[in-house]
Image (cartoon, rainbow, N blue to C red):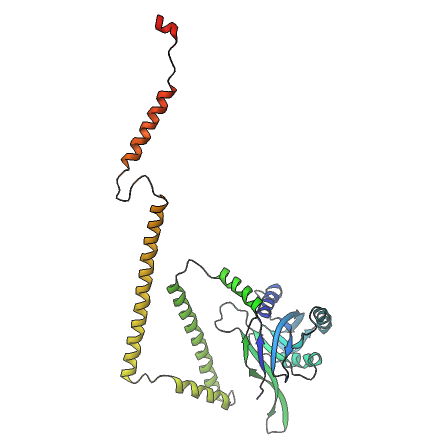
Amino acid sequence: MTNTSVILHPLCLLSVVDHYNRVAKDTSKRVVGVLLGSRGRQGAEIDVANSFGVPFEERPNDSDVWFLDHNYLETMFRMFKKVNSKEDIVGFYSTGPLLKKNDLKIRQLMRKFTGAHEPVFIIIDVRPGVEGLPTTAYEAVEEIEGNGKEIGWAFKHIPCIIQAEESEAVGVEHLVRDINDPSTSTLALKIKEKISGLSGLATRLTQIKEYIEKVVSGKYPINNQIVYNLQNILNLLPNLNVDVLVRSMQVKTNDMHMVMYISSLIRSVVALHSLLLNKIKYKDIDDVGLDGKTDVTKVTSGDKDADKEETKMEPKESPSKKSA
């Protein structure tokens, strides 16, 4: 099992999404590109800081027919090398969302640019409706096939995290601030996050169910590492057959949600009270008072002012008229 781990920066995610929207938006095609970054001292930790797209075509029904412009790749890499000499080619990406047979062949082509190190392969899921982390990292390892005589290559999962530097974190914060709706209350936002989390959990459970069914039917071989992980997950689940545990969980959940509901009501009442105080302070009210009665003082003073203006505007009589 490989010990390689990947750190992916948000700039790569933005670059991949832009590449997909320019080339393959509203189609069933995928896009492929190159990952730039650096490796640790022992080569186990890979820091992916940048990426760029590469012209790529493949035939959907025939995995042996595909094209990747490696001349364009070499030209772009020389240009990126002039900007940042510390970044090297560490692997490649694809928008997937699943592995394909061509990926091993692309990996073999990328070996020419990564030197002695094995290139990493990251699938970045650009579909907007998918919940959870949009990245899945792989590395090719040798495995024994059949009766133990043949040796082939297969992709294995490796850990992948998204980490940003200070400048990148500021940019991501501004993007998230523009995306979020400020008119949405905190309670509605928490409910939305709960729904998205539950939908992601349902997707993972469906994948586990499909995998177990295929293993039982003999379509997939048994992977002991996956079986051990599933056993650990089941052991960590609470025993819902115990009535005392179920009752305590329900009581605690209800109490917590009641406090959240009451807090939201109090916040709404305080906000309305503050709004009324501001209107009274800045006199931003209509001529009709809060109790529904007309402000008589204001109307009377207005009439007196109008009478004064009419008196001033009356013309004086001439002396000839007075003598007559």
